[in-house]
Image (cartoon, rainbow, N blue to C red):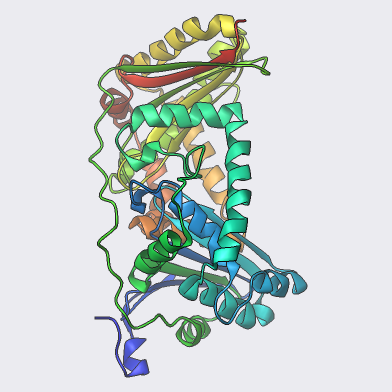
Length: 435
């Protein structure tokens, strides 16, 4: 049991890492994880709070609940009125935002170091003691419905959600993070409060602080402002997702819509989960090999040489239980079938012919550079640490560049053979209405 009447003992770190890495990781006795990096050369601090409370934790009957709670967190507590925190941060020139994913929700702010204390105090209060007022809940539902409607008006979002549903047909990974087109009619503020009570607990959260703040100051800040109610949370209503199964056939969904000129084609495969980190790194490289620049394989073939497409993009989405590798193409509708065939040919070649060393080296450099460019700012560093920590693999935040450079052609060939079947995949197409 995390609670102890001796405050010093309750907040005593029980595990700390920091000697070999720039980040101090402290696991408090109540289960809360605190990650801290001191950057004295910048006058700002980023606070990024990650919660293991994404779509995968929603009750199956209430899809979209995690996203609704993300909105309601900012609607006040018994001591903080709605919009009070926003006004406080804006008056100080700070930034605040939040996001929900399949494996997490996170809330972050950036402020000047000498103005951190009151802002952190209110953000912690909102996350720990969210009240979810009835009036605010009803008003926010309309905002969320508008957000969902706007998403469904975006053809690229629709295609992506469709192909995810084909890859993950019986798993929360196949549901939209925003929720379904219509929120469940029985969704209530009580559902949101219960979800918050169950999941927004210290053992389920990571607080990341990066910037002009010493480790002692960071721990003291958390000590003084992060205190949970003493009643243990029930876990009875949490969902238990079904195991993931590889796509064992060609799963196809064709759609038509008015108002677009270009067709869309997205192909997807089930990839490795976060614990298979070396394999995940390889998928980042395969993505660059296929679509990373004008000399990449699909761009060179389909765009530069044949001229059949307008653009192509690939990406690997790392997730706790199983990733998703996608190739998305924008093209003239008349080329849909032949472009799919060409992509299949490239997948076959990846599994049959080792990638030349020169090509691999170019892609490794691009991936490592992109990683470095993406960690130049304090908020980027905080997001990196929080993301990998909440997935359970913080070490990946430090080893990524080195392991990318260590991957050889044989490893990538094996990955392609194992995961990127030229005959077993999910595909969704969207084209202008034929009438």
